[in-house]
Amino acid sequence: MTLLFMKLIDATTRAGLTALKKLDRRAEPETSTREAVAAVLAGVRARGDAAVVEYTEKFDRARLTPKSLAVPAAELAAAWKGLPAATRRLLQSSHRNVVAFARAGLRKSWSRRNEQGARVGEIYQGFDRVGVYVPGGTAPLVSTAIMTVTLAKVAGCREIVVTTPCGPNGSVNPALLAALHLAGATEVYRIGGIQAIGALAFGTKTIRPVAKITGPGNKYVIEAKRQVFGMVAIDQLPGPSEVMVLADDTGHAAWIAADLVAQAEHGHGSQAVLVTPSRKLAAAVAAEVAAQLGTLSRQEYLEAALKTGGFIVVTADLDQAVAVANAYASEHLSLIVQNEKQVLPRITTAGAIFVGNHAPVAVGDYLAGPSHTLPTGGAGKSFPGLTVDQFQRRTSVVRLDAASIRKSAPLVKALSDLEGLDAHGRSAMIRLG
Image 1 (cartoon, helix red, strand yellow):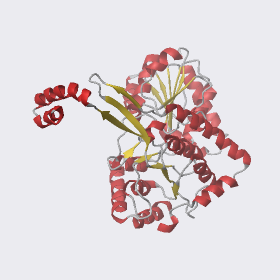
Image 2 (tube, rainbow, N blue to C red):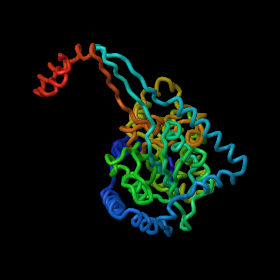
Image 3 (cartoon, rainbow, N blue to C red):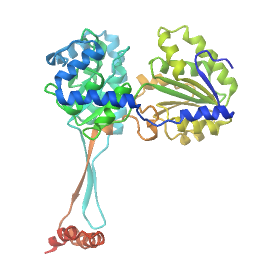
Image 4 (cartoon, rainbow, N blue to C red):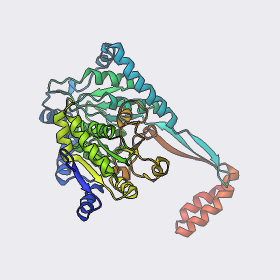
């Protein structure tokens, strides 16, 4: 089998099994990345706006001042009004699906009585102030704006603060600003990278700190989120895009190739992997990838991404293919097998699963309803994708009356005696008079 752009791993051979170990991933930053991020975060923490402006000029070649960091609300509204009517309807279609899906996933407050008659329950409330990172780069990610900010809005967050990189002239793509307006952003700042995460976490004179930071980014943004965890909450570790297609010989080669190429379109760091027990399908997909590349506008990005992050894995059987998929923990998993109902429950680490030949990952990227902000780099073994309840704060509530404390206090005393913490027991028993 000749592969022009992707690497072949034959998992039926000893060499293939050795190579396969590299696809069993856990999210872990490189030492150089960790150190670079720590230095920038320290600068933002110590010098606030001055450091944010300095790093924005250094990394994004944009000369800003503290007063020009914020995008005025009027500019957001004007961007929305300036879109063609057809484009507004297009964004609204995606937005409606995301809103409906998010509303279905909201956690609801509840209460019940325990065995001793105490009233116990949980209250769910939206965070007062959250931060959302929306990447810039080579494409205006209007879909990311909708699939992050909308969830915060549905959850009831009062202040939704967005940071997104600007171009060298300080401008942000108008379509992206329009999408942020539609989704419900209350503040937008034209900064990206490590310095944006630092500003959201530590706060500056211009940007007040948030309680939680969400959204995808490159490896530096993701490492910055990891390093500020604890000072703020974070959602997950969503880095460069990736897809794995797990298919048997029922897979449609041209459609599978199109899915692989689509995710590689995000460029550097993207990964596109086919795992299949069918050598015939593997060869057909490889040929299709080569044929389709020549017809697309971002061919340079595609070829570079596929040469470094493109793999075709041929397995001995479907069971081995499933094991490879779970070890890889892909952001997106396309499942195209004859007995999908039996295989689907066995996939335990994917960020999102797209079932069948007729379910392109791009529908999840833009339209279906679930957020496309998903764990990458193996983080799916520990983190779920972004959901509306991640914008809700959970608080437990306990209420006792005279009757329930009479039943509870002796048990509390006995348990506290077991631990040697007699003050705990006394604090309950004293209420019995």
